[in-house]
Length: 259
Image 1: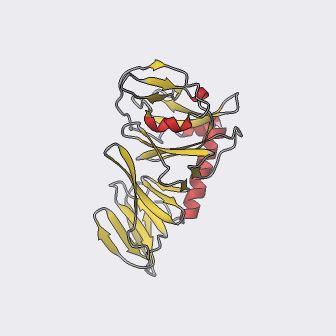
Image 2: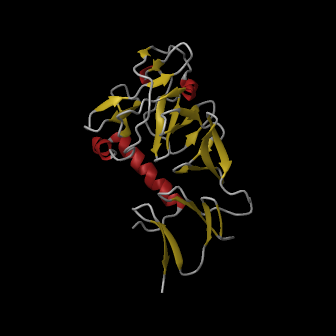
Image 3: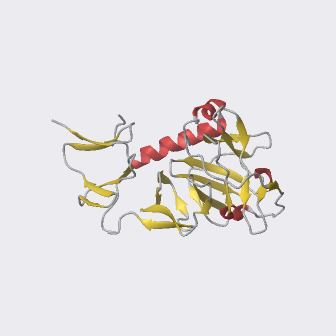
């Protein structure tokens, strides 16, 4: 069972894992379980078309990734010094991911080498895959997910492969499944009417969120020093001397009481 971690420790651990994904083959082979069992539907094999747009990263919010047969995703730095998103199938074979742009006139493919920037960050959870692109051609990975004139961040719904802009939460550092922190506020992400919605995790701004965990059932546990209450799948627990909440490797939340 996992020991309790602070949010800062969790972010640092996830960042280190992403860095390894991008820079070593060992990490690539180790990421096979990241998107286990997320296969989504698709519309066949669209024709390939180069973009040619000098600033086309923003158009990814109109795209999807074909996830049929995909078991994991990772980053790899290639000879052109750009980071590429690659996919693995069940047999361990890898291939470059293409972004499929849907339109009434038919689907086209936006290849990664035709994008006007590079992938600077990748985080994978069961609910969403988070991607950050930036125009700087430096091959180093970023720690945060920004949306501004230099960077574009996206969240891909792992159930459909559809990609959504994260402009509504323009600075994100911490992700716990579909819960993200922007600045000092935590938000719950959901897809409603074909759009990404970001709603505050805790309505009461007087409650400071110290820790967030999501269990295997989708229950969101929020550690704080103010109140203990439950509303739907949101469970706020108050820190009590002698009690520690910990998310186990089995996805269950445990309360550990010291004697």
